[in-house]
Amino acid sequence: MSQEYNKYKPTDYVEDPELPLAEVESQLGPEQLKTARRSRQLDADLKRAFAELRAGTDRPLDGAAFDRRLREAIREPDRGEVVYLSEVRRREVKDRLREAFVYSEFRYVRYGVAAVLVAALLSPVWMRYLGGSAGEEQIASGELALKSAPVMPGAAQSEDDLAGDVMAPPEYSQNQDRRLEQPGVDAADVQIRILEEKLGRARTDSEKLTLLRQLEELYQRAGDAAKLAAVRESIRKIDR
Amino acid sequence: MDVQEQRNRERDLIERIKGGDADAYMDLVGAYRTRLFRKACSILNDAEDAEDALQEALLTAYRALPRFRGESGIYTWLYRIVVNKCRDHLRSRKSGSEESLELYQPLLSDDRVAVEKNVELSDDAGYLIEKVNGLERKYRQILLYRYYEDFSYEEIANLLQVNIGTVKSRLFKARELLKRSIVRNGRGEDYFSAL
Picture 1 (cartoon, one colour):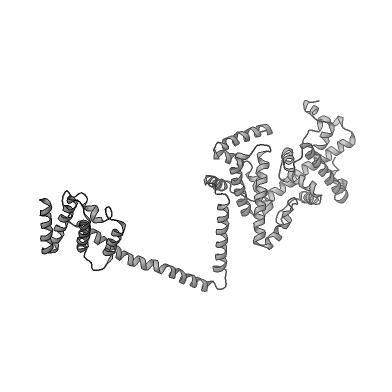
Picture 2 (picture 1 turned 90 degrees about the horizontal axis):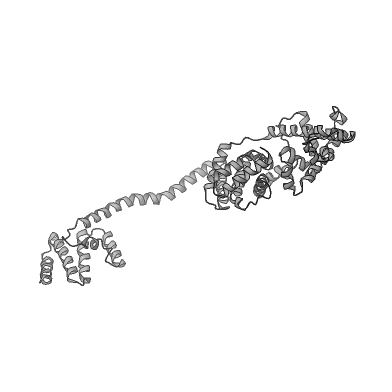
């Protein structure tokens, strides 16, 4: 008798078909033995029958693809049910659209309506694109004019000042932008006006001097003799 | 690999997963994927839905794993999550379409085998499964756990919240009832004539 036998009572061998019956046959009565044998036969037959059923009903699963998707899902941050719910919603919307546009009797009418709607939605974007590219050219030329304006050597702040963003308050920048947007206004005129306004607010002599020299250059280019003379006079006074 | 070795291996994998090793999780669930997918298919009767439900269940399990205390085996724990997720899917089908609920009604009872018409079974297998379907629910369920889902005694004990001795004696009783059904209302003593 093996050690295994000592762990179990004879009735265990009757009930459990996994235990080897041969070792305890002599310990069991004829009725117990018959019951144990029939139970084992049924156990074996059931295993066979259900294995057959599994083989017939199991659906194929692409394990590699399944694992890849699961791995990706694991890497995603935990967003709880949100991902699942949004996926469900997305599917529902897709199904409804498919139902309406693909299977409907009036699908061609709906295609037409959808095309008109898409066109109506896209036309402002298209118009804006067309108009926008021309506007971009205008602004680009304005910027070029501002950048090409002469700057006195040694006037470290002049570029920033001309851009109008560093020293000037916000409303000033806005005014400047509005002026630049007005059609027919010369970029040089705008620069002159900006510099004149700045000159009006300038407090130190060096600040005034820098602005006056820039204005001198612009008046000279504009051929405004009266203003040029006035600016030179002012420069002379400060230099003294 | 015996049960103890398997337990140790799983414990080791779980520790690695808790330490952030996602590959260990793939190793852990890879061994059970086919069985879990079969279960999901048997509830949802649709391979695509079953795959989605299984994927969601395994993701839920991964996130919940730090809370797994190891009181039950990992497989029965995963199995419960899969069953719950499949029930969620059934509920969403129910709210979506009454017709689909009707279609899956026979499977909702969960432990009666619905053999599809296109599945070819031998006469003996078909006969035995039909007899199992005729048993009282308690016995039918335990036979399906054991023979269809291939659960160990321990796993069944865990699922039914009973001890292993109860599992063995209930299985024995189920086989006895099956035997009686075969002898009295079926093929008679001939079925066991060789014994």
